[in-house]
Image: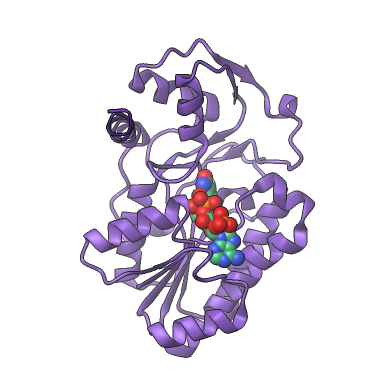
Length: 288
Ligand SMILES: NC(=O)c1ccc[n+]([C@@H]2O[C@H](COP(=O)([O-])OP(=O)(O)OC[C@H]3O[C@@H](n4cnc5c(N)ncnc54)[C@H](OP(=O)(O)O)[C@@H]3O)[C@@H](O)[C@H]2O)c1
């Protein structure tokens, strides 16, 4: 198995989980493989001859993408396309990660595979283009859309909130954006299962449970970690005036996983409790 973007939040979790599960993993970070470099992608996949490639590489700076659409297109659309072409050449399964930001957020309920994507941002458009190009170039492609990902590796919304709260800094949390949180470890486990099943298609992979706002999610995390919530300042997305528009609702549900009777991932509140205990163990180890 070959994992790209292995220095990121999801890439690290995937490489770690699959290695512990007994897979032979070649984990390549951005420096080791730039997925926009056609000759490197082709040579790497040709030499490694993996049975599966899990693409965790992407340019995930949503506001950055808004001001540099060319870079976004290269990393998020051209990259998956090149990986698909190289996977096709060696008959490897490609799993590429996509995002809930391909939806516009106008729907009241959970987004399923029956809902039409309509990205609001350059980031969302580039990721949707990546899905389409990968699926067009190689039939053995699995697209996994996820959202609100948190984990003990890398920087993410939750780790930033908790670090800043512990330092006593006040922070703004968005009250009107709703999603389905996803624990990177649970995502990694499901990615390996999907690799074993080898059933091409588009999957939505998130923890189970009701949707939650960023604010509700942050408050639940701080409650579990025993940190005072008093420094959280509730704001609307509009008040933050961020460069890139974002969907106010991007809760996901997977009709395909239900149809093939895959067990739902754990409830995000249980996943959050696991995250909080691991995160405090890591912090204690660092401060001792
Ligand atoms: N985090 C979330 O909440 C979330 C939600 C929905 C979907 N996703 C998707 O999940 C996947 C993984 O994201 P993540 O959260 O793990 O983000 P991340 O922590 O930013 O990791 C992405 C990694 O990709 C690398 N990368 C960027 N451009 C690359 C290129 N051209 N070639 C090779 N590597 C490159 C980055 O390296 P550098 O930092 O060195 O550039 C980074 O290590 C992405 O497809 C993302 O769109 C994430």
